[in-house]
Length: 152
Image 1 (tube, rainbow, N blue to C red):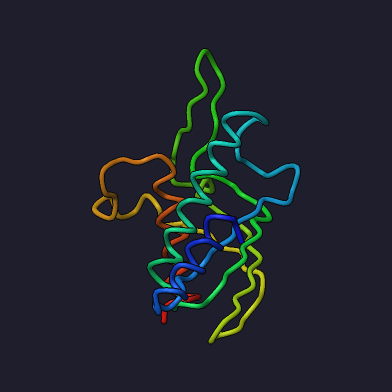
Image 2: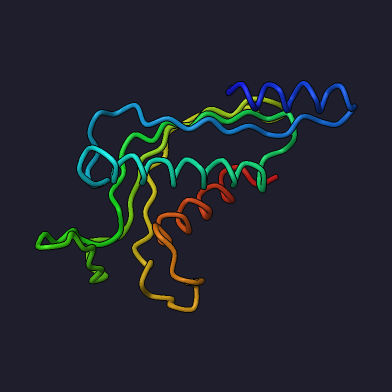
């Protein structure tokens, strides 16, 4: 648990409030199927995905639960095309977003496991898309998984 999360939990206990759920996300693999070249871009993708998973914890986990997620593999939506500028092109074939996640939930509900998730219909429903957002397909896929796996 991060230092900030520990301080928040201590304040919540002191105030008589239930402690908020905490989500810890790690990327233990040195390489991934498709997360961008090592460096700023890959770190940025990892940070965006981690922040999104942590936000989902506040939405779907019960107070006093802790969730650890190891992101084992990432394959982003679309295919990377190289040229003057790297671009992702989504054709709707086999380029859908996929991830492998290992998780451990502790608290009132305990569970653990490893899931391989994907969203082959990520381009089928344009109305599902909100404002265009970076990693939108991946975030939608993660929310569907999170809701199904951890919703209380």
